Length: 455
Image (cartoon, rainbow, N blue to C red; front, side, top):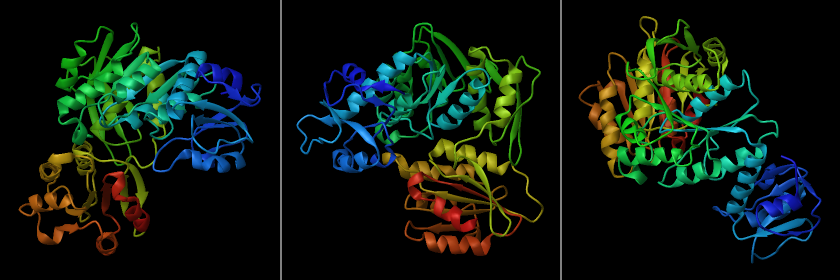
């Protein structure tokens, strides 16, 4: 972005104390990421962002939003006083979005948001100037920041939109007024706050609250909760999945070690993605639907999907220090995601005498049902398919108890949350060169430390 302070002040209904002609070239709420020409937005979190104004100025900030009445207002740079810096940043983002006026694609879902966002952006970039959410910067802070970081020539803005409470997607939908919305699936993520899968589905549907009248909803047609709720949407609708009543459905699917292939109804083209698993094929079909919406050919879509780069720590393959292959999927975790990963992992062929080893960390934010949801994963683990299981964390003790009747003691290993060093040592002593290992757990379980020691 490139905007004078006078224009910014008008956009957020403030006045500028300082040189109104100062040109702002970037916005940041992290004082360490401010650059010359930057507008610093002090947010209230664990720390008060206003406390970092000196750092922001030292790093090149030439202006700041400042909460009215807050002490120590700076004099060395221009100041725009506001009632709430976050709301003002969102208002500025909405103004800039309307100014650039790209077509907006909003993507949400219990799982697959980031992968779908990456796939969709890759597909659309074949023809358009595309700006997308960085990493998973998908909340009430990340979405406006993504908007403010887009270039003026952006034609399509691909936004990942996350939530853990009702009302959040309503707010993000109102902020962005998407032209196309995608709902990847409904799982159990954030069930602690939303009570049930029905509650989760209601919250996900909020992304359509400000869907433009000529817009389109693309959603997972294999989810009855979404089919039921989408019936109330008047805009165009497209479904994807594996059932023959979906608009786009897979007619063939094979998963290999580093990629998966699939075909779809009505097309002779075979598609390939550099990820494994049926769930990622589902994500790819949603990206395909978006591509078709914008006039992309299946050939263009296939070429983009074959070469897209997924965000880090999402089902990446690493090499272990004794030669084992390690599948790392350690960004987040919930029952649906774990089942999908275990299914995909179990389909990978291993040399005779080698083993599949699963390392599972706690799934966080599952609320009162956490114990049963962990224990229920036992149905997805078969000792003939996944030969050894390492479980880590307080909640995984419930799965350990459920697996005792299925796994021999020497093939089932449980470690408390303060026993990561012991688990790492046991793993390193256990793993053989031709074994394959999967790491899956919530980000808060820090399985990246295990990965680092196994590399």
